[in-house]
Amino acid sequence: MRLRNITGSKELIAECRYIVTEPERYKGKWNSYFGNANPIHIEIGMGKGKFVAEMSKLYPEINYIGIEMYSSVLYRAVKKIERIAPDMNLGLICMDARDLNTVFAEKEIERIYLNFSDPWPKDRHAKRRITHRDFLAAYSNILVEGGLIEFKTDNKDLFHFSIAEQEAAGWKAIKVSHDLHNEIEMMQGNIMTEYEEKFSAQGNPIFKYLISRKER
Image (cartoon, rainbow, N blue to C red; front, top):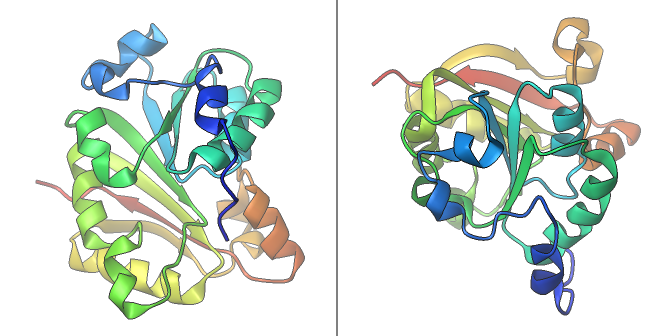
């Protein structure tokens, strides 16, 4: 369920020091935004921002970019992130993931995180799922050689769909889990999102895969 619009949220988030208001101008030169040559990881559909903020805090040697389509959701994330994130190895963008190639150049991103994405359960909405092969093609374009996608969900149908899509698109599965929280190796370094905390507390298994970019 999406959060309601907040009057003036676009104006309010624009005042946050982490917000990138014209991300297109950094295409191919995101390291100039961060002021270093560190690897860049992005989270698509960052929600309330706990995951990307915690990752930024734990791994200052990596640059993180959180992407969220809805300004009302991003507004809530901004308030939390300003308390958690330690410095400027973090950028936030309000945009549709379908526009990734207008913001990032080829082979500019090392890793993509997809956490608890909208499952779009109706068959006619399959192309809207963030793991559809059309999205995978866009990810393949911006990822470096050997670049990775980490995907987590509690939705079994979306997980099976995603596995089928990545196989059809020629991606290579590195690790796959049907019960993440009961697998010690895959849980190492796991940062839980708000949704992950909620769903796992309800006893729902968490599904995860790690896949490598299709060779071109």
